[in-house]
Length: 367
Ligand code: NAD
Image (cartoon, rainbow, N blue to C red; front, side, top):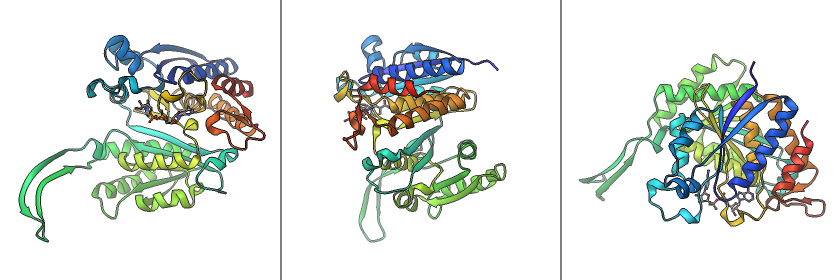
């Protein structure tokens, strides 16, 4: 099997170039160990593209992304572009890439390293390792919306006036493609999938349950359970260690993935992946933004982007061993006390690092 890969690299704005440089250095060291050829081609998007080309997502970037095995992205945006027209905002680049690449699922792992548990708002909890699979292109964020005026009063006599609505709708195809993906991810983890929904109220949720139970027949080794969103939000705090893989709709996933990320303690450690149909390029990026407040200071924690590149190796390039090597190296540097300032806990034994030093530490642990 060919082990030559081509990735599109978008540094973006703020700390984007610094953290992407870190991930590329780690990828290149990993590629040497595992005899891979990874050709990284840089493209421009976000604020940098607005400055250079007048648009946040130049055609060349889009074409380059489509022609690659995967896309690695830093972060876009910053105060410099706060006043540009809405259709030209740097974040438009992300929406454009997601839609052009058909990225319908967003994967956000929430892993709590035992050494960083002090940073978590939950104290003394058992290790947390959750993968949230969020539907990304359907549901209420993309459903029919509008408003109309009504002369009818409510049943208690309150005048209605202007009525505004958003609509949650999902097709069978949209549900089954992401549920299948979640089953296969759960299978590669601990074999436990939780569907989060609101099936006691919503018709769409009942459809998610029906489809998930049917697909479960193709994954008999995966245990499926279902939780209402309100209960899931509570259980994530009460017993986060009991979750393995969670699959849910766009809006529920939006909220739940932020909650899960927060309980792990630090935004500088959280990677993400957005995936489309098998065989199409996925996009990998840290959960955090471009952190303009620390850009150029060397304070950026590169681990979220380094872990995003590990997800890329596993999910888009099929290089599981190389991915695991990066993840183990990160665990090791954390357990040996290497810390960027955002994760400086237990100050007496830590080795304080800037972005480059943390990157070097990870590279030195790769096997
Ligand atoms: P942010 O995530 O950039 O920063 C929030 C806080 O976390 C800041 O104090 C920052 O210094 C810190 N932080 C973030 N990443 C860090 C890292 N790797 N290491 C150490 N500290 C880190 O969120 P924000 O300040 O709300 O947004 C800044 C810009 O980023 C805005 O223009 C926003 O629109 C954009 N943004 C982009 C993305 C993306 O590209 N996917 C996501 C979120 C925000």
